Length: 597
Ligand SMILES: [Zn+2]
Ligand SMILES: [Zn+2]
Ligand SMILES: [Zn+2]
Ligand SMILES: [Zn+2]
Image (cartoon, rainbow, N blue to C red):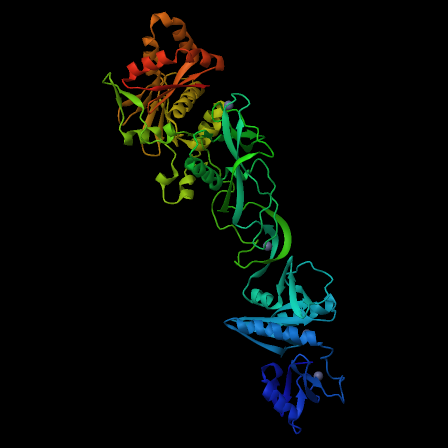
């Protein structure tokens, strides 16, 4: 039952004829209807649903010379639906029952220089027959899409696209993997290039993820730390397939800069003071880099709970680059965004974008930019306070906002970089392989060797956010270098991002800010303080001298570290005296805090 025939020698497409015109044709007794398919006599018909079509004359309903047979009414309606969908698209021309070299397409659409045939197969057709017909289309430069009502093999084949056509309650649906598209939507998607053959599944670039923040207590120092986990296990592809991610430790998603950045921002916005983000560090296991959380107080690895109780769950839509999961799976990829699973990763970012960050103590004294530390000018003997701008540089806060407009690009600075020249590489390897394990990760990610000779080693350095940490790390680095090069007089110079230079040598534990001749000298203040303890408190002095240290002076708070909890209890008995002495030393009122280290 076709839509095309000749009426009085003129080709007519029944679909394009108005009802009135069709009725006029039907009433005309003198008309001559010739079928397009076989030139035999035909008649005009109207189905009970009002569908207009032609049929062979009842005198010869199945002519021997006609290959056009057995089309059902569903077949006709499907053709019409395809045609209507094509006509709704801009820039697409189409017609029904178009013949070519050895083929006759149910619907042929033309879009630019593409010719696309839609073939409806209501009755079964074997694969060999389909392949032969497909080849005829191919030779005429026509792509052909097959819509089979009955389909035996659903495995996708890019050179022979076959989809299942399903009719339910008068509606046609096309099955594309797990999606059921209306026939019209399928045709539009196909013509718009929204269906593509892909050999593997890939999570889409944008993912909605849930990050759970949990707290835990360090197994060693019992201090509170916060860490986070991504709670998703499924990352849908562009074509809405659930792609599972293999959560290997090595490629832990948590430590991607995109995620870490969200956490840092979140923590900084919080009002509570006791939020302590654990450090993110890596170690090597069988030459594989493995990332983990470590205690921000003592560096001990943190045991993450598999089902942690979250104090907060952050929901974010994140752009992941590179993509986070893929698996081999040939499929027809249907994507409205026209981004498919086979899409190459448009990025020159390294396969694993990782960063080193130091856990940040979240407390007012740290985040308050106006906090001041006490410094001593070499020439003068009197303590004085640095101005706010100097503090910011000295304190080296890792602040996303300050670095650049695009937060992601600012994090690039913290990525592992292999920018060391080949001659320096072996020396550099030698140095950081000799570092204690705890420090290795930091130097590998934040520093690179610039030059060296017998007197001085110069490195580029992205400093951690606390001067105290920097000092500690650099002293370890200095000692390591001195050991490696067997030279006690060797010095280390670090060139920082803001073009400052800091010099370390074994003379003292001083950090010299060369450009300003300013010395931040906690150990001198500590010594001065110890000297001021009155002789009737000799045991306190001995105790602090042996087991204590001045960790930091921030704003008006003096932080003293002690090596055990009982010591803190003991020292707290003399808290007022300690406070008094510090106030004398620093010439201002202070609070004293003790922490375990
Ligand atoms: Zn015929
Ligand atoms: Zn057909
Ligand atoms: Zn700890
Ligand atoms: Zn896909």
